[in-house]
Length: 330
Image (cartoon, helix red, strand yellow):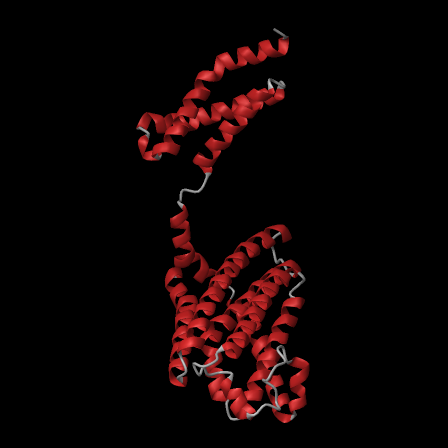
């Protein structure tokens, strides 16, 4: 037996009993949960963990057998995850996301959300008046060039927002295009926020221009109320998701440019966690919007019903994001 093997053998013989005892406790926890441990086991657990860490440190320092070092690394990692890891289950964490994490994250980016909404709807209003004054302004901003143009008749435009039951293909395609476009804009607004928020602002402005252009076309034909109702049944949730994506992008970009009193790395880590929570929620909102869009497009032709659903969804989101979190903070 070589000197290295002899050292490893003696080292293992002196301390292996503690390692095995520690491994046995971890196996019991993994199999039956922490409640399976008695009082003496709970007291012994941190001592055995410290012993294993000390053994690992010594084994590395004197370059003992590689297999022994790998075994101790695995054992210490398992112990660390139990002793210092989060005390929660997946379903509890999942529940906490909806009960606390998501609404609080959105509530805390309220200023960025207002700024994001101001850009998108501000440009929508500007382009709306431009197209109303001169229909030629529609074409630089039109996202989907089809029959929905200033030259289309009121009857043609009306057919694109009501499902007659005979042929809903055109309505389905247009709605799907809108949803795909808005989803892409949402993801890009969030992902490009690191560039100090400038691409985010441009995307929000661009989306607002498209929105304003299409509303102006339908408005000029006396179908503004009807078109907004058709759009709002899913658009309240969908456009809200875009605004929140923009807010998350601005949070990242703003923190990168102005980290405040914290180190830039620490400030970005905190902002990234909050923006990530908002971003995950944004994807959920887009999924809900897709359900509302599919349901509303196929089954609802009543303007009153459309506005009732849109108003209810808006009230629900405002309550969830801006009223409910106040109770959590109090």
